[in-house]
Image 1 (cartoon, helix red, strand yellow):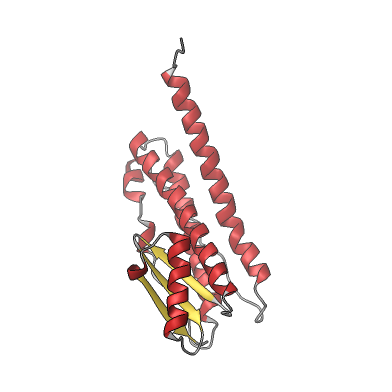
Image 2 (tube, one colour):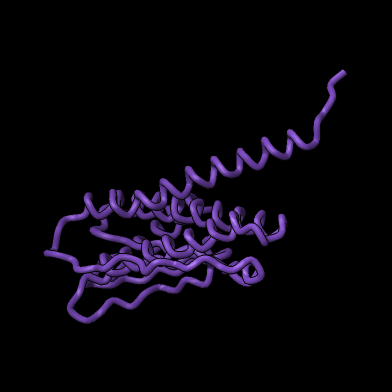
Length: 195
C-alpha cells in the first residue's frame, strides 16, 4: 500500500515550481544578451538598463500582480532602428515584470493563492517569450531580414521588415506564426515596416 504524505508532496511541488521558475527566469534574462550579441551592430546603444524594482509590501502583494498581455508594441523613435528599439524595450519590460513577479512569489505576507498566481504568470511570461522567439526565427528563415512577433491572450501581431508584402507572403507568415504559437490564423495581424 502506498501512503501519501501531503506535506512532503506539497513541499516537492513547491520546490519543483521554484526550480522551473528559476530556469525560466534565467533563460528569459539571458535571451536578451544572446540576441544582442547575435544582431549586427548599428553603433553603440546607450541604455541605463531597467530601473531597480522595489518589492511590494506584504499587504500590497496582491495588488502587485499584473497581466503580461498589457504590453503594447513600442513605437520606435524617429531615426532609430524600430526592431532593435522594440527588442530592447521588450526585454526591459519583461525583466521588470519578472522581477516584480519573483518578489510577489517570495513575499512573506502574500497568500498561497497570490504566490501561485504570480508563479503561473511568471511561467506564462517565459512561455510567451519562447514562442515569440521561435516564431520570429521561423519567419526570418523564410527570407525576411527582421521580424517581431508580439503575443497577447489569443492573438498575435507580427511586424516584418519589408517595404511591402504580397498576399502570398502574408499567408505564409500567418501560417508559420499560427503553427508555432497555436494562435488562430484569423487572430494574427501582419504589418510591413521598412526602417
